[in-house]
Image (cartoon, rainbow, N blue to C red; front, top):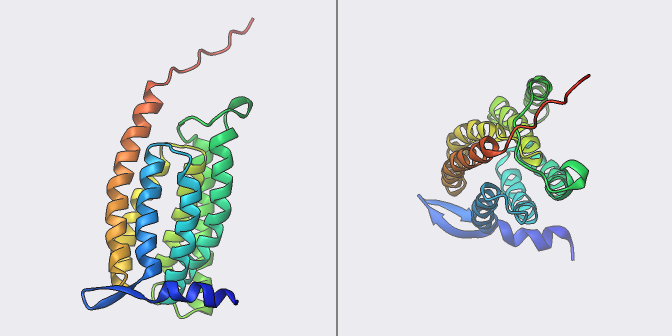
Length: 216
């Protein structure tokens, strides 16, 4: 059986919202997405496998409505999900579980440069080779999402600020593309991201700062 035969039914209408049909992929993406972010806030390792299922579902949705950068981004998310899963389990000192930390200035520097470059390149590519109606916003949210995912993989507190920024763009963008359920999902994501930011900041602040090494 071809892959399209297996995945095709996921794009069939499940419910109708505001006169616009919502596919099974979008509906299941809503459920798995909300669960994934809730698990991330709680630092539960199960966020990674459930998150992989979520991005596959949303990738189908984005491809169907012409958000090509977002669709391609889901493939990267699968790889990052596997990386983050490993990092959370073994990314700490001596391959221990990872703890919440802050983003260093050096990390911010290369993240901002990489994000700006990715936005410029993706905008040009989408405007030139696709029929995307929103090439800049599609590219910007893609770049910011990758930056945020890196921070999430490394349990950086500031990754939540990036996700909050992304959500504030995604909410009207998905409504514009008639993905109303996904737009509502990102309102929920926004609330969960604020909760995650507060929780991770508390944990980071509560952790004792190591004493500097004594030199002789």
